[in-house]
Length: 326
Image (cartoon, one colour):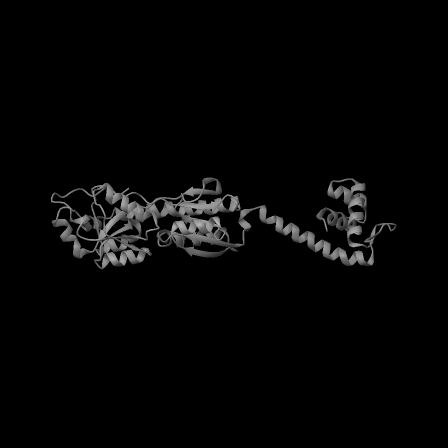
């Protein structure tokens, strides 16, 4: 089997015409150069160098082999450059994300990522966090923008992303009803949330139990945009990431409930396997963190707009102050 050390010794001996000069170039002894070339000749079964010539010359077969050996070493050097800098990463990136992120800061993230790595090709999967985590650990995906906590900590590395504030929304047609009937917000209409396998569904069930709503009616829906559409059409109370429906809320297509206790925040991470390219993955994570943080700041600024003041539903006899927007 060919050895890179043997090829190095042969190529440099031919280029420099001397075992001594090749030894200096490779920082080894002259006998080591001779020994490596002898092993190479033994492997291929023919003499590759005319040792009696000065400077040393390759044999006829040696000249032919030199061209291949030089090309092999060049390809080796090019391959090793991949590990010199993450900036040169060019393999397809199998990226998984949850729909909430896909409909918020994800386009900006992809733009910045491809500007940073212009040779990068994205293979995108959008799914629930549990399914994405399973595909990550089975090596079907490389990096996730999703909820953490489904895999053993020693299997992965992760960086925290800015969380999403969650809210409950209704169609304008139900706003007056819920404002006039104390307690009606949790009994008059079904709730609409993500699928049962998604953590937001579990969080909603736990939240409703904590505020005294037992066995609630919850429509589970696979896509964020479908939840928003069903809510706008008056089919129930939608539990939605506030930032992703700001336009609908601002236009008056949705009204937000002033809940007695805020819904828990939805927390996400950028996640990759510990065995993956660490510098590149952490660089991708930093871009994701910056995009998520910028998006959160912009959404908070948008929510400070006074047009949202009249878009709240006070589900009690005595008007209450809506929960503060972080």
